[in-house]
Amino acid sequence: MRTRWPDGSAFDYEDARLERDRGLRTAMSHAALGSDLRAVAGVDGRTAASLGADGDLAMPTSGASSPVFALASLVERRASGTLAAVEQATLVAGMLTRPGEATVLRHEAPGRPRPARSAGRPMAARVSLPAYDRAFESKLYLKAARCPTCAELSYPPRSMCLSCGGPVEGPDVTLARTGVIYSVVTVRVPVPGLATPYSLAVVELDGTGVRTLVPVTGVEPGTARIGDRGTLVFRRILVRSGVPDYGYAFWPEVTA
Image (cartoon, rainbow, N blue to C red; front, side, top):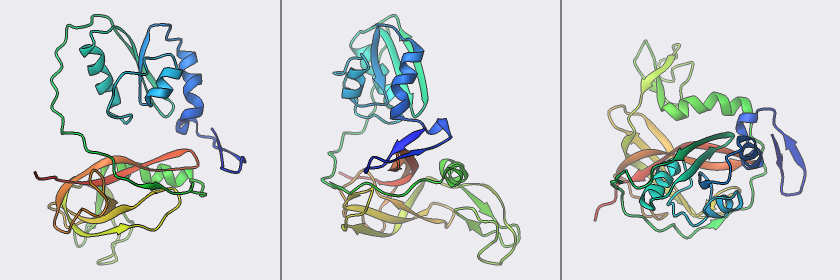
């Protein structure tokens, strides 16, 4: 995989799994989906249209749930054809051949307007692929390590207990994805690679005593408060030299 810096210089990665936009068109051409391509989930409407799909297909997201929304939209339009879904270097395609025979039941929270933020300048830091690989599983499954001597939990997992100094095994303890804000701060100073302002919260996870530092999502920056309850949700945190980095963010419960 080759990524380019803002100054035009190139950097090559040997792991093709991290391929994204540069490999999308190649993967689509190798798939030979034909002329009946109706939708491409996982990309914005303009990109979908440039690939030969219906760019007017309304989808509220280009994230991991976009294939479900795209399928529902096709059924509601009583449309048939090929639906493709892409995520980094993976492409999956399916054929919708009998339009209008399925009922779509929507149970969706009302949409929230995007916060007004300013994009920071590109981050000039290369991602370490070994570190990326080591950290990904513990972030994805949200697991902690338990000390066999004093039962203290550590997240992120460590090889030595910070409480008693003994060796730690694991990680094998699945943490709750719900919790309460213990502390919160809003950053308004421009930060490379991030859109500002944004809020960061220390969240105490239910039933574990574990606290983790995560960004706040789903609400206006500066509106989250200490004591707010919510859920940890998986989000793309930032993109470093073309490689998307994922992690958890805290989504506060919104009361009417």
